[in-house]
Image 1 (cartoon, rainbow, N blue to C red):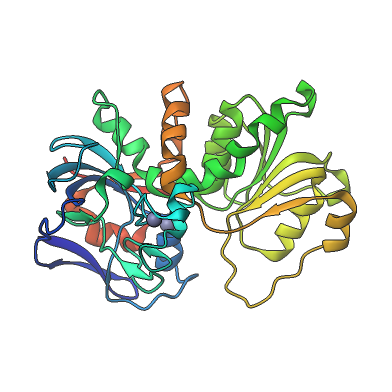
Image 2: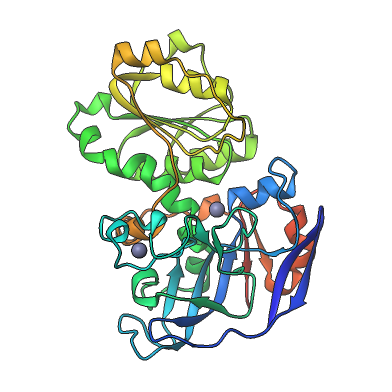
Length: 345
Ligand SMILES: [Zn+2]
Ligand SMILES: [Zn+2]
């Protein structure tokens, strides 16, 4: 089979690799149909995250099941499925608790398409075939009536869309227990996750203030129903929010988002900080009882709930910056600047 490999800075190429085969009863083989770049893939392309080249890329995508082991019962050949980027067994204590990103049957950070960071590399989704070791636990079937445009809009359901959902979804009951005028969410965006967070918060009926430095993303946030702001106000001018979302991985912006979180409010940070320490305004947070959430998403656990939100009419397609033909991926991948989806025709 063919797979797209990160060869060296600025260069990606198609390489031949052996076809995976069914070797266990729990396994499935899937053929990716639409693969999205993760925000992290864009950061690797533009040099913000210097990963060592030499690995097969792609870890967000929807696929068609082409073969299943004897023990697989929840999906069958021909089904279209979301493939979570994290590999999880569905049976261990962590999986049973919904902590599917920390499955103890596989090494920590077992995932697809990011070998330098992975405890176990499942290979890249930019490939003709992908092996899914725990098909019943991992794969989530998509509605049969989705057309190709729908598949493109949800290709990020493996990772970035769940990462955005967990910044808002778990707090929706808190938010809607408030007086209507207080149902406000602040999203500090810098990538697709912030856009998806704005979309979910608006779809849930909150007023959303979206802050970013990128004109194009600001326009997308407005399409999602958010009020767009091209710079944060000075901290004392924000009317504080019960729910804040920070995605820029900039410590000074994080501090501003924390100060904009109201007493007993919650701030979720999806950023990855590679520096050993990050300053936080802990006295101000203590005084106001601000809850701070960091960490990796448990993608598989939240995908079914998100599919329900999408079925109720939340349209995430404006977040897709560019759709590229599958065969053009080698030249398009190193030129990505936003959410790019590679689609088989
Ligand atoms: Zn990712
Ligand atoms: Zn597990």
